[in-house]
Length: 231
Image 1 (cartoon, rainbow, N blue to C red):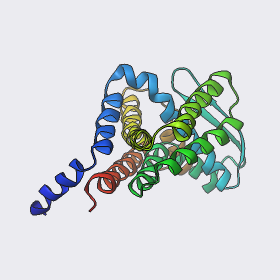
Image 2: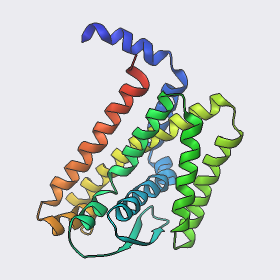
Image 3: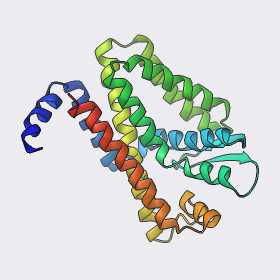
């Protein structure tokens, strides 16, 4: 395995746009000031995960709200117990990382433009279900930027932007889970997705938070291999 390391590093060096996008996204996520400005993008993906899970499990999706403090809530109708509700709560925290991984697969396949148009379409679908003014502003702003790059940017810019978006969702998904774990230890977030899942299933909330962490970490590791290591 060690003898493969120089080849892996050379492969990463041969993809400067993707590698640079990853470094940029990591800085944005780690720097508190920029994270506060951009975290709503992760929240959109998070609430979208809840929404998709609700629809796929047969629940009625009644609305999504995004708030200026970067929190959000997705409302659905249906039974107050059962696998459908469990999967709906489960779909939130892993969603940014899983979307980032799916996007990484498209970038690696030289389909950055396709990724950006899919992202724009998902944001339009999300907009239909937004039920507050800040949420509309956040989704329209995000969709406008992504759509403009998909439509007008040169190919190199599209690739770099698409890669940065994927990295941001991957790193941001991990930071969001970290914030959940830290907040729960400090006695906050007692109505978090993990706590809701604990009440529904009897499985401790800490184990659900650990599952979120495991899924987000696995998505990042696979994406690194797909984008920077795979020969």
